[in-house]
Length: 564
Image 1 (cartoon, one colour):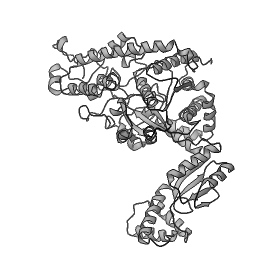
Image 2 (tube, one colour; image 1 turned 120 degrees about the vertical axis):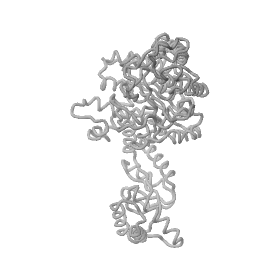
Image 3 (cartoon, one colour; image 1 turned 120 degrees about the horizontal axis):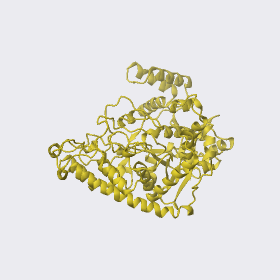
């Protein structure tokens, strides 16, 4: 529903908008101008989706570049590129495994994930899991944050340990806000999170600056990170202050904080621009583990590509000679034959190196096994691991091979031994990724442009006026709208229905969509309905904020940081 300047359309039968976008050709990708963990929301649905169908394909096509930057200059022009470039997986593929998925998941607003399956498994099997997201208190909470609040509340109601963190150290170091401003904004975020349904008696809300456990964990994790790595991930240079770098490591500690008492699957709902934090944390979580677990076939270590070739060689030779011992030399001969026949597409260096290692191992039996690698284990932990492995095993200086365990059993045993001997045993954190929301004026939603977003602190009348003034995806005239249908997939107002105003009522969201693209719904009436619903939502939200404000002093939360 785009805007119209046609003066011949009457106000009662109008497809006209009250305000035109400053630039109707502006790219609708939004930047991460006020992002922290979970600080981002979603943007417009894909243009080629069927009416009323889940919006899961990833957004606008044709982008030349995908950039992920957690601090303000990021654009994500094509969500599909994220699947290819960063290994983010499609959420629609795992949706059938998620118990009682809520509206943002069903409608494809949660469009991607990283390793969410352990969380879904834990929910289905009533096992421990956690959900955490954070908010940098640099301005008012807005409707984008509300979507992340909802995802945290959903996981809490599914039985997870829920955490809401206020990233005040980052706000101070990366944005330069003084502590009085931070305290005011932090209070507003907490009240809106509580008003969204977060149960403080069954969850945890905390500030980075007052959580000593997080700061201590950040110190330990920082030992495993270095400047060149942060420079590569975040573009830090000689002008980057140390506190800003420290805030990054603090965020990795935030992400792992729910696992300090007990290792468990943990999901972090974020915008895709926050994925660098997730990837760094997963790396650091692995580096502080006592043991790594891999599959192996011989005493020497192989990389994943080499292990695939070893598995192929072993399975083929074992099928051909079921009663014989398969030896490394036999596998070397097999792979040489495969290379001569052109039957393998592996890089020559990979194949040559593997054949050489197999040849040197010679008569050593080639047998599948799981390998426990000593990464950071204490002598006590390594000895405890050897003792804990039942059945046939071979002990080496820096690893142990077990022949009667599956990889899953070995990973569970390694984590158990690690925790029992003083280690963390972290489970790699998972993430869900939300689409960015288009600004009400078209283009990006920015906290510095009040007309582009709706603050959860806006009075209901202001919220009403902002929606009435929003740009749309409609046709130039009511006649064209009825004939061609509206462009709901390009409409910020339809996003309000899909993301917020329809609540859990998929039927209502689908009805709005189909009436729009079918030409039955005109922009004036559609915006009036959305504006009325928004005013009602803001009034209800602020009433619940007021109720919580009277009880805030009773919560275990530091309203005042005490810093100056």
